Image (cartoon, rainbow, N blue to C red; front, side, top):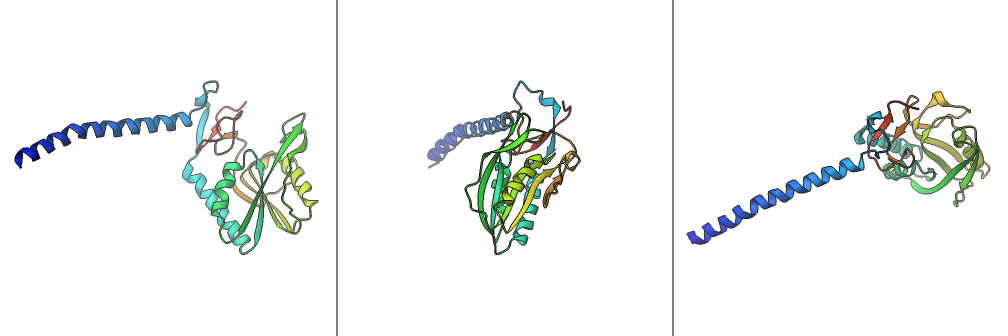
Length: 220
């Protein structure tokens, strides 16, 4: 019996360091993968990007907005129209925070002739909605609004379909940049004139998958 116990102990002693080694390697790999995912590409100067909002802070904003919509549209139907591409991550989280409301989702994509859709270019629809919104509650969801030109165009366009109600929600708002008369009905957070990246927002298609949000320290 003692010999069997001694043999078993030797076996455990042999495999224990191996298991610990594997756990350590797994932890290191996970950390490296996380760092790689959140690292800006080499052609950008990552030191210019400063952490702005942590994952928990973003979650709190989304939960608050979801609760507000749950109260506003309780027992009703709501058609959410997201503006591609920036709003996709935000909408995925937002709709899961809306309770007691039957939610429909559709998307539009805006394009611009000549300049950025948030600048002086002519805004057009690259992708229109396929949902009938006549006599229905409609909510336009954007992740960030600055000049407001794109949403001003979109709101006017959707009004032509005679929805029952038409409101605008944005996670971030830059009211000081507004170039047209546009006031969102729901705002997650007002921010200064900062270029932010992460949580759906990009810099030349980089950064959309970041769980946290960064701002550009030295804007061009």
